Length: 616
Image (cartoon, rainbow, N blue to C red; front, side, top):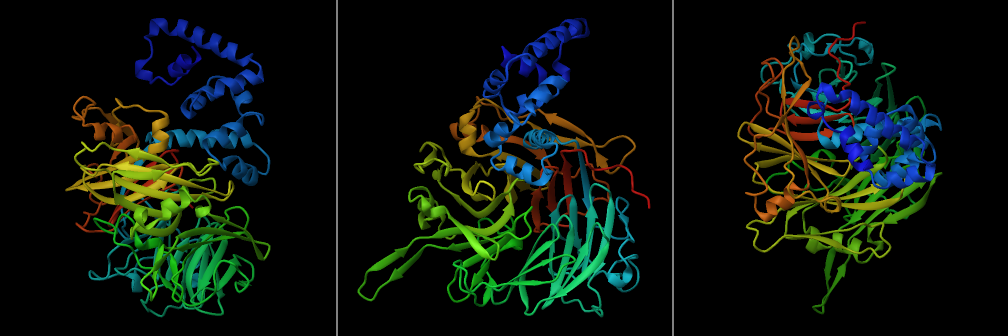
């Protein structure tokens, strides 16, 4: 009965009873709400065991008493641990112990909108300088510190020089550069929420267009070359520079904390406004410092674009060990070193050979030492099978990216076509494997994407396996967030974003006859920028009765589809995409960003994009 009641609460407005029955319906709703409010706390906990995130989100909006009970410290941590391992620790760390239940409610709300594709607004836009009418150029950064206040003069790019290229996305900001080469000296950062634009040029560059390494967090933009690093603070609108004792190969930033890796794999830590600090790596059990180079990019069919060479790991030249680094988001003195040694076959002179198993290890550094190391291969059944050459072959890719907002990182990506791919829950004590099987009668095995994830709060690995069917079009890019895989497909001028749930999680709640919704956009009257309406496209030729068995299995894992075609973008907002331009998918809880060469589409799930320019 209560489950039916929650379904009524979640029912769309268009399907609710007519006006003549609204009074009776409201009375019944109030009665049910009052009954639940007077249940003992233990029965609330028992009731919540049968509810899903959408049900709880609806229940929190019923009345104050429900919200007070369900967001109490006795209940919300259990819900967080059940659906979002690591979230309760993250909330306790970031909130300072105040309003933790409300933090959980906001996260739950954003999660439900994000996984359902219910965007609040959208934007089609192009990377433009002089002709841009959406963003306003800020003059907050002094010109002597690299701030750009005008596009005229030496930055007036000629017809052969101007070729906008996407750089990065982080926390509602899109960074791109106007030049035609990969490492810029002139960077543009657009804030999607405030519609402010900041433009930066490397100080004292003397007109040199040699390019600089870049990185960006929610607080800093980094541009550096050789031993010099410049950092601009978004909130303070000021520049600070630091010189490293040796040339750096990689810079990683989290908040206002920076980690630099030198060409000899030495590590330096720096915080904005503080002195540089060297980390002695010689006593590390992680690796022996030595010359490092950028690791080779694996050749993923049909192209490397959907994997992206933008976050390739480092490789020690002598040992071949792959390295990557990331900083703890809330503890500035803690960072992690990821080491990955691929499976090797060593041949001996007597004709025999030895197989050296692959190893993926995360080392946690704090208080000037490695305090713990976490290995995926601890479970001989799960870890070794996932990392085996038979499973990954040469299609693996070490490259960390955040995969949720509460301490989750996707460390290793693999891509291929197979009939059976190993998946399982590393949290199980026996490390048992599960498999997604497809019948031999299926004409084409699905494309599988494997993600090895690690959570810094639970200190555990998680294996995500997503299956796709590639008859929609060519794969252009992918993005993992909240256990979902968003993939962009290109078919002529058509652009489609498909969100797919983990195939293991989908089997817990099978819906074989469900046809996933497809959302498109339309313009809002009087506004040629922000698109606020969404339409559910139910005119689909695909139905459960006409699909093959394999297609029905794959459809059961699809959350939604987004139409990314730019039919509503004005000429100034959109630049015609090149046939082989760079395509990327990125995002977080608030935004999903699809970059299509010199243009991009943004979907906002928290309605943070403003329609008004911020005036100074």
